[in-house]
Image (cartoon, rainbow, N blue to C red):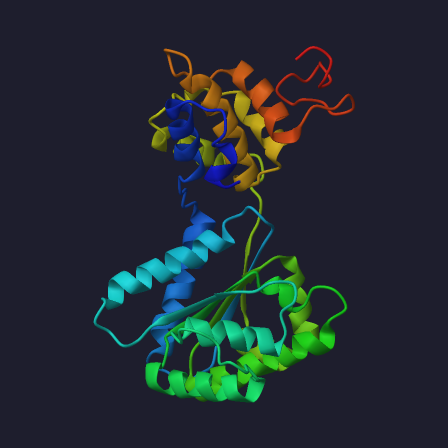
Length: 301
């Protein structure tokens, strides 16, 4: 959920509380491990002439886009504004093919606009010329699952071949993030995945100590409301409601915080989550609200 989704019909204090939840960053151990692996890969490739890469698989809402943003911010700070070396970043959509990825790369490399007749050969020349000069440290690709989703094996092979040529020629790693559909690349183009051979998975949290630690981190970082209630028995209901997904958790915490922010105590209660679940999921006669387990939603919450 984006912060803009919660803007209508809210007081300033409710809006601030919701935004504080939605924008908090919790760097759990697996997130940090993948982040450090990506940074080490980029640093290693600065000295070695070995095309390489990392594929990061995660279901929506588990922080893969945030991870790429953090990598980019970290490298920008470590290099400084005066360095010629750069980190390229593109995001793909469901219509990606070689022409579209070349278009995205052309803009990512700093060209102000595409050529008036953006043929693939011309864009390839522009891209290769700029890559030769910039020698980027890495290419970050978000939503990379679009390369291989659906019955698109020929297109996926062409796109990854296009990437492979430039990885080899200009010696930069590709760090791609997407859903579990990325696994199909191993069958579609093993030459590409032999280069981008490291794979990490950001999985939803199972219920247990790591989940409780995640909740505790949220409670500690949010100052606009008191989220201490999530550090107790409510942890199980929160896991049942979100299936361990961070985005789903943020959504519930944001809706509950909106209600708490309107009270003088600013204290989130268990009852806030009964309505927060309805706000997030909608009311249904057939769905059981995990925060009120004996009462089907729509029958008395």
